[in-house]
Length: 312
Image (tube, rainbow, N blue to C red):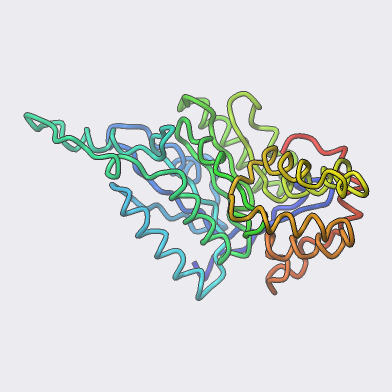
């Protein structure tokens, strides 16, 4: 990947959020008889010659961990800013390997029973691997799913006391139809890569069929909510009720973190700018030398401009 070019994708929202990408990495766990979604899109439909397009054939959950280990080692030695693509089946429990397993045992008289650990790569397990890789990629990782029910991945609670799990993600809601996925993803990647414009690219997806999540925007909404609803005397009088409501609304459900959030709420009352800088550094990795030209906005910028934002 040393010869790949970095392409900056700009104009995500009114604060001009941006990321860079330099490679496309596909996890292929489809059966041989099934249509592949992402590899043909980048090979034939888009003609993307600026990026290395790597396809990893994975036939078990453990092989996904192996690929992530390879990517983590690479990211430690060179700039890795990938689009991760998952091409296969999905389930409410995770990436689903059962169609691949059944296809490989088609000729067997009796198919051995497959365990849960063999069938699923659980969403929480994937979330942790993606988050670790995104840290090494300086918060430039984009992740897209070609499988049904993969919006379950985005239901994993995001902890703002930790680093962002990815820069942006797209996942189908419920069952996915291959032809519709291909049409929408071609439009999305074309607008994103050819025009470098997330605002335009995200319009490729309907709200009812896809769930899109940009954790940076979610963090902005959190701070806007803090400023609008939980500031000043109201927070001081009803701090615990406000904190419980805040954590529940934004799915920050990790019990051990509640005392830390309580401390941050107290700090917010005293100095919102300092708290915002701390969250930006920790969650967005804004102090990483590779991000010196990103995330330059302040708490005041967010409070002033958050209301016009649309869907994330």
